[in-house]
Length: 329
Image 1: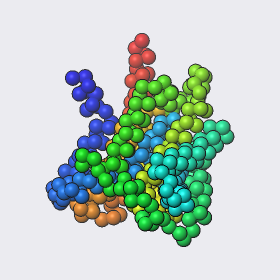
Image 2: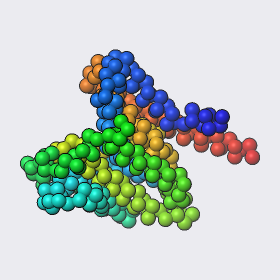
Image 3: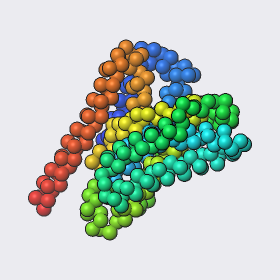
Image 4: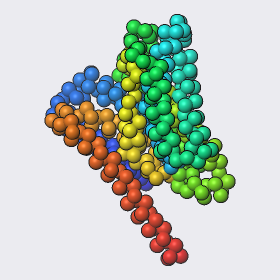
């Protein structure tokens, strides 16, 4: 009973119920939204890439930072993926995955080093690298683009194939989600990320490896953006200099909507994942319901603002309870 009670009290449960409501309303309006092979497949497949970015973003935000460069990292690694297939004929697909993930991790390391060692706010640093990485991408890509004919059919099959009716991209994203959730909740290093986000100064005084943990958080975010870049190439088959544009804002929005406190120290990757599904599903469902494009964007904005306000209210309420307990004792 306690488990059931905790489930219904969790922030993630409310987001999950909102997701179910959106799917139900859209399905009532148009049954093919869910009850068709393509509808069910797209419901699972389309949010997968954003889910990976949201998980990495959640880990960074938990440390009281933010990574605005993930969309640009995705674009760079997606183009790198295509170039590897073109420039190194016959290269093994697993090696392409490893190379792109490592490249993304290296870009994340640059972000983390500037934040952790230079002590510059992450918002400023990653806003700068967002444009820097995008500029490198545009310079490297130029007017060129990667086409599906440039990549192996076995690789492109990753973006379309399913296992037990579940898209392979979704399975990959869920595996990453489970590993990230396990790390945050069972490993000491994962728990320390929450302590750092709750009070960085206190964490430093307590002897936690604040610089190292923040650095790792950005590396993980970059690596997941690199993985998302590979899957983006497999999913869409075409990559140009605009790949991943604005995805960083959606990743932040998904994490915040999913209950990851923008002020750090609380939230889960599970909530960020549900937030990613909710954002993408809303964008697909609102046109079916008959909502105009402007109001679609407004709904997402309201969700983000509402999540931030709710986090602040809950934080103040928790602080008030602690004060009352201290006074009673």
